[in-house]
Image (cartoon, rainbow, N blue to C red):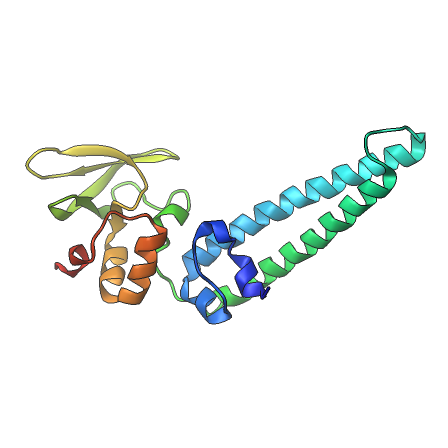
Length: 198
């Protein structure tokens, strides 16, 4: 398996099989992948440390446990090999990020704090399209926006695909190839005509 293909786990539903396709994801999405693999590396470090302690304990005490020292050594070798692969993934992503364009991150891959207080955003109201809105409150997991339409004035929502920054909407309107991928990965409720309106 190529490293480009390995960098994006299959359950993330983002088809990547080359460096070019990985670069196409854009800087923000690569940053998300980098963070993902950094957490994986931390978890693997903990696993390696625990296995070494367990092996040391068994060797020192000759205690009989449900696993032999040989089994633990095999697990340790596998964990160290995984640690090396993760390190390669991280180095590869960092290199690709250097050439990646700034693009709107997939809505499910946005970092915490992506939207900020008083920011002007667009909010999608089904059957009406995009309306201008303003971020009036936020926590780690939700933001409250205020907008004006016939029925409602305020809504609380997670930072999901129904909210777009102004530059993100502009970018997605002007880049249909990336927009297609963004819609798919973001589980967005938009239909392409929403992006064609000015």
